[in-house]
Image (cartoon, rainbow, N blue to C red; front, top):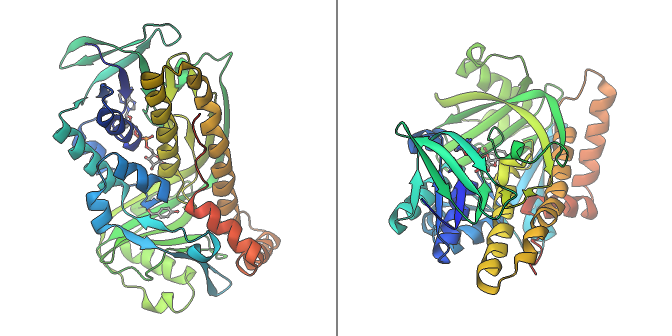
Amino acid sequence: MRTQIAIIGAGPSGLLLGQLLHNAGIDNVIIERRSAAYVLGRIRAGVLEEGTVRLLREAGAGARMDAEGIVHAGVQLAFGGISRRVDLGAHANGRTVLVYGQTEMTRDLMEAREAAGALTLYEVDDTQIHGADSAHPALTFTLNGQRERLECDYIAGCDGFRGISRSTIPDSIRREYEKVYPFGWLGLLSDTAPVSHEIVYGAHDRGFSLCSMRSMTRSRYYIEVPLDEKVDDWSDDRFWDELRRRLPEPYASELVTGPSLEKSIAGLRSFVVEPMQYGRLFLVGDAAHIVPPTGAKGLNLAASDVNYLYRILLKVYREKREDLLLKYSSLCLDRIWKAERFSWWMTSMLHRLSDNPFDHRIQLAELDYFTGSTEGLQTIARNYVGLPYAAVD
Ligand code: APR
Ligand code: PHB
């Protein structure tokens, strides 16, 4: 088999890149370790920056998002018994975010790809990368018990944090930066009306909480828990009681509870690999970086990597601008490190960092300062809606 771009991974990164390239007439094949149903079963975040929204439209997969996504012009930061609104529009030049589940975005991209007749090979095993630093890279993998070879011009490693692409970059060149946080998020999904029409990030001396949503009838809530906590120890009632204790009024008394559709614990991590390119291999999305979910940057960073790689490849094929390939890593990393900083800062400001009450009072002062001053609100709002993309040239 031969294609122009071989894409490893059918998560949001691989699917979005594949669809943009396909529409531009650049042939690509996606190989994915799991089944389509498995990929769609993963519940992830759901806040899209305008740049992500534009890319999905450009990929021709934005119709349902435009019909069903909910524009949010503000977010709430709750602390010390009150909740303060960050007016995104007012403090970030009229920009807003769109609440639309990553699972839905993935489904739309899968459907668009199928309608376009582009090839995705699901349930492949033992993916291997060959000749990444040569002029003739290739992938080999097992499909239906048979070993296959896919030759290509370039490889996009969109295979997530636990994929194989990253380790193809030799140790002598690869640098990894990591911070693992000593707490996790216990998440619950329920068919109940959200407690607020805006997302609420809460700091409390019992720990962080987050009230989010997928629609006006489906809510997504999280509470910070110790890393060794077991999800089986958390009945729905225990979850709702703990969440309620961490919320200020009127949210605490207005919280609508109901049976959980899903409940799980996820650890929090910050991670970046440099560089994101090795020869003809390009790392995209979670394969190259992880952020803690506080700030909703994970999916949006994946989209900004896709944006850069797509625009570079367009110029490579249309204008023979091979020189741009060497710019991919630094274009991405410039934006990634700023989003890493924002996610780390939001995490540090909102979670229970220690048993020392001093730390908690410092957090309250920081929250009061940032939500109580124009410059503070601008800092939060401009980072939350997403920093601008750099031009590719
Ligand atoms: N061969 C083929 N596919 C693989 C391999 C492999 N060796 N290893 C992993 N994959 C697949 C995974 O099964 C998964 O479907 O790659 C895909 C990677 O998808 P994601 O983990 O969703 O990563 P990405 O597409 O970069 O999505 C961006 O940002 O913060 C997050 O929640 C956000 O998941 C979202 C991510
Ligand atoms: C979510 O809706 O799942 C969500 C929202 C905002 C975040 C993280 C997760 O920062």
